[in-house]
Length: 423
Ligand code: PMP
Image 1 (cartoon, rainbow, N blue to C red):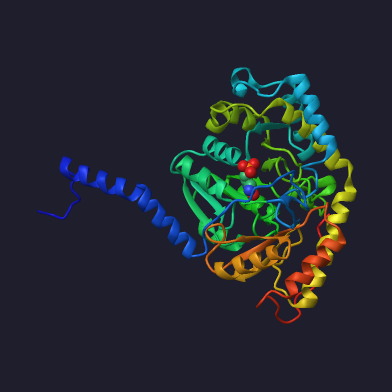
Image 2: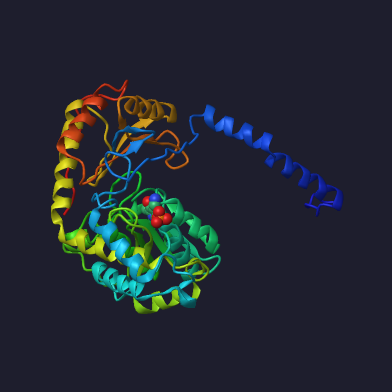
């Protein structure tokens, strides 16, 4: 007899089921949660009393926050609240159906047109969240078994999209296009995917190089610009525009994913691309087809946010000043901020325990900065993820620097020079 795996008999199957059940019962779950706590990897939520902002009230206490992705300070802007109320008056609250049934209204349609024009693509398609947009694009445009190349630091939703699509996911070292070329070397590639601005590191993807590798490989390039749109590029047009303004020729082939719950201060997401790509998503993207459309009032409020975000360049200019101030101050203190030019300014701690201790020490003094730990970032790369917002003042940044200076083990030799938000 060989050693081939045999199919489990019915008794074995029952044993396996019992083992699985044991692993999932409450006692087993409690002990797994305890393990996470002991490893400093347990995640707890906070409950905000009022609106999002740089000075939220949490458990009755006002704190200074460097945690949100509300980069332009729009999440609680009165003009957006007015637009949401106006939208609710006009369209009601719920969309009541999926887009392909009767959930798609004028407010959605207009926002799609505005977003397409904003990012410079013929069409845009709204999704209910960025997570769902990424699942939808990858699974609609790739076939099972095809090769997909992804930056190792991409957002989790892009990896999950690859899993859903059943592609061969090949992850290349962060932003290393030479390594990507070596990995691909003559093989097939259906798609390349990259964050535009990396969510936990704050640096920019090498979009022009990725676009040219995609072209050579006959592959699609998908750029998830959740953290670039509204923030970088001319009038906040994002990572692609950052490179266009420096002479890169954008031939329109890159597919852009953008989220609306960050710089634009509302909720939802979109994909912008050529006409056939968007029509294919409408026909095939399951996370588009089988879900309720965004509330139309939110789409209405997002159109107002998009107008405001483009018009009020002062928000990006102010952010640029804050980034430069934080980086200059950190360099003076010898704090190891990672090399980022965007509002995401991570301070490397190393192990999860240190990151958590730093975050708790800041919180004790009324300043919130999230500790980001594995599995969100690689092991040994736990960090404080400082995010700046146009709603911060220079004094807020100075206060943060004052507290960072006294974190145990945070300061080293005066380090690299300051860099600002790219235009
Ligand atoms: N992509 C990136 C890079 C993100 O940071 C996020 C949100 N954290 C998403 C996608 C998902 O977007 P949403 O929150 O709209 O689901």
